[in-house]
Image (cartoon, rainbow, N blue to C red; front, side, top):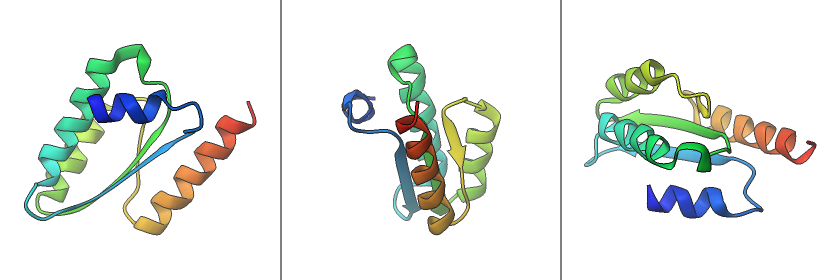
Length: 96
């Protein structure tokens, strides 16, 4: 939660791109960590997170994120798609 708090607290950050290839750390653990951090941060978390998971336990990780249905989390299956989505969300935030 602390790392995400630091990133989200930066005024220049408009969106966060989380790209994980689960090798040693499984994607389900990463997904639980993301949701747990967002729950801990509560209203302090206000910027979109684009999450791309691949590798060990990817389906479980995606299911955890989908089930949580957190409004700030946007899932993408490819790195290119996730990068594009993060840029789009950042541009939308900048135009507000």
